[in-house]
Length: 182
Image (cartoon, rainbow, N blue to C red; front, side, top):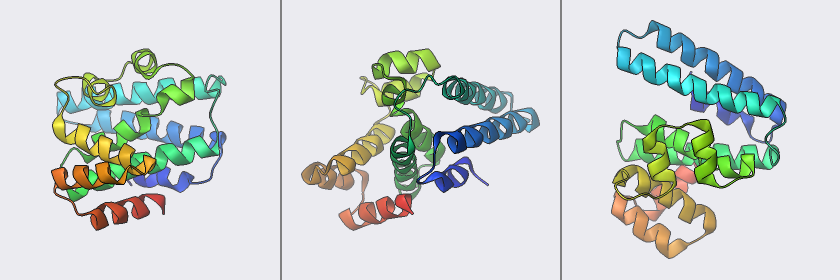
């Protein structure tokens, strides 16, 4: 079962459940890394497990000051919404959009600027570039992340323009959001 399918069960949950899902995700990422025959993929999965390990440790130590059910819900909806849009766009990197959503609220969870939070966790450059809106960031991933943010903020003209830029109708975007909340 994909990580996104596991964590979407967390709607309305508390921090201890989120920690349990993080632990399970770490275990599965490490297992997948050890089973992979591709050394690049194995290194990526292992590195990703280490990032989630860091979040788990911070959560266990009470270092996530703004953590609660609302934060969990927003993170999960944002992650799933981005993943849904990437899948609809036919982008095989949809797991990256899911992770971008997970990391997008790291600043709120750690109560520090996003750039500092991303540096502390040590995320891959592609995540930093998209989340910080850096020049040269991947256009598709940046466009999907922007669309998610515009939708959350109710900036409907920006939603319309972003959706069109990605080849979506507004109805498709709305359906992807509803699916992310279920």
